[in-house]
Image (tube, rainbow, N blue to C red; front, side):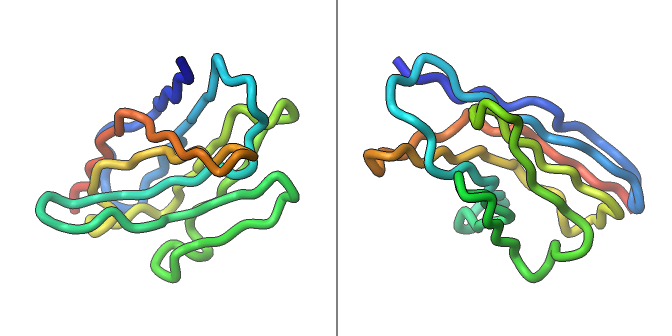
Length: 116
């Protein structure tokens, strides 16, 4: 059973920083891409940032220049460095993993709260 485990959420004041981590384990298929999505209650889950095995990255316009996604050498852990956080960044953040067989898995979500 594949496991996707997130950590690093919490509460911070506006202008502060947080780093989220996401680790994939128990997979026999290599990871193609890892990404972070966020969701407010009653709204859709939106892409925040994504990194592919090639190293290519995508960012939502709202976080460009503030957030940075990276992966470790194993390719099974991804990090989302969030700087200059704003109250509108408050949401539950979910890690999404796409495997080479195009199967997707989600983490359980981690709350990020930014106070003004």
